[in-house]
Length: 519
Image 1 (cartoon, rainbow, N blue to C red):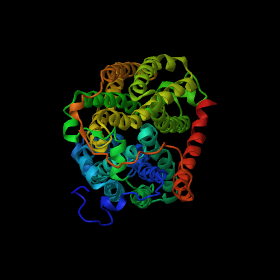
Image 2: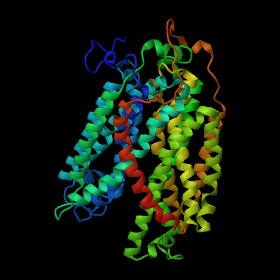
Image 3: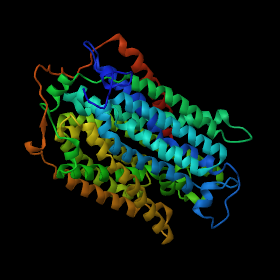
Image 4: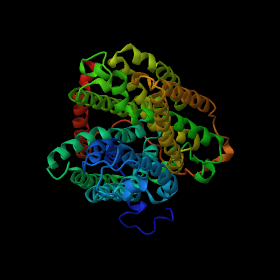
C-alpha cells in the first residue's frame, strides 16, 4: 500500500479497499452525494439580488473597491458579489491541481471528507459575512475556502469510478459529474424556499439559509465520503489499460496533455460565458415577448412586467441547467460507443453552428427555438466535463487519472475568467456604441463560435502516446473486471433513493418554471 496512508485508521486508504462481494454500484451514489452539494456553486446567484438590497442604501458614487469590502452601512452591487463565483471556480481548478496527486495516494475518503469540511465550512463563513455585512468574509468563505472544497469534492470520485468501470468509463464519470450540474437545480429552489421561510422585517433570510444549507451539505457529503470504496490493486492492474499508466509528473510534459487542456478550456469558455449571463441575456434579447408584449424592449416594460420577465428568465436558466445535467450523462455514455475524440468533434462542430446561428435565432423572435438551441449547447458544455476524465484515461491510462485530471482542471479556472469576460466586454462595448439591447450579444456569440473552432483543431490533433511514456504495473494473479451491468442488490435501494429523491424534486421544479418558455 502507498506510504501516504500510514496505519489503518478509519480514513486510511487500506480501510476502503473493497472486499469480496462488494457491489460497485454502491460507489456512484457516494459520488453523486458530494457532487450534488458542491454543484450549488452554480446556484449561488439566487442570493445576489436579496443581498444587493439588504441595507437599502447605495454606497456613495465613486467608492473604492476596498470600501465595498469593508462597508457595513451600504448595499453591495452585483459586481461586488460575482467574484465569489469566479474565485470559487479558480480555486476549484487550483486545489484540484495541487492535491490531485495526494488524492491518488490517500484515497477518495480523505479527500471527500476534507471537501465536506471546506465547502459547507465556506458557506457557513459566508453566512457570517452576510450577518456582519462584511463582503471580504463572503469572498474568503464562498470563494477561497469553498473553492478548495469544490476542487477536492470534484475530483474525489473520478479516479475511483474509472477504475471500477473500465469498460464504461464515460458512463461512470458521467453519472457522478452529472451531480455537479444538478446541484443548482436542487439547491437553488431549496434556497428560495428557505429564504421565504426565514424572511422577516429584519432581513431577507440569506444568512440563515446559507447556514442551514451548510449543515445539510456537511451531513450529505460526509455520508458520501464514507460510502467510497476502491477496487483491490490487483483488479486495477488488470484493467488500467493493461496495467499501463503515465506518471502524473510526466503527463504535463506531453503535447497531448496541453491539447486536451485546450479542448476543455475552449469548450468550457463558450458554455460558461452563456451561463453567467443567461438571465439578462434572454430578457434583453426578447424583452416584452417573454410576457406577451411583443415590440417592447426590456427597459420599456413596467415594473410588474419586468418582474414577470425575470421569472421567465429563471425558467430559462433552469431549463439550461436541466440539459447541462442530462448532457453530462448522455454524452459521456455516448462516448463509450463512438470514442472521446469523435464526441468532442460533435461538440465543436455542432456548437459552432449553433453559436453562429444564435443571432439569427434571436432575430426570429422565437423564444422556444432560441431556448432549444441553447439547451443543446449547454448539454455539450456539461458533456465536455463528464467526458474529459474518460478521455484522459484513454490517453494516459487509468492508474493516475485522478491526479492528471486535477491538473487539467486548471483549464476550467482559465475558462471561468475567459468566457464571462468575453461576453461582458462585448456586451458593454455594444451598449456604449448605442446598439439596441436585443443585439448586444451578437458579436460575443460569433467570438464564442470562433473559440469552438480552435477547440476543434486541438481535438483533431490529439494522438496516442508512445509506449515509452508509460510505466507498467504487474498484473500477475489479477482478475478481470466484469461487464458494467447493474448487479441487483437490496443494499442499493437506500443510497440510490437518497440521491434520486432530491434529483426528482429538482427536475419537477425546473419543469414547472421552464414551461412558460414554450407557451
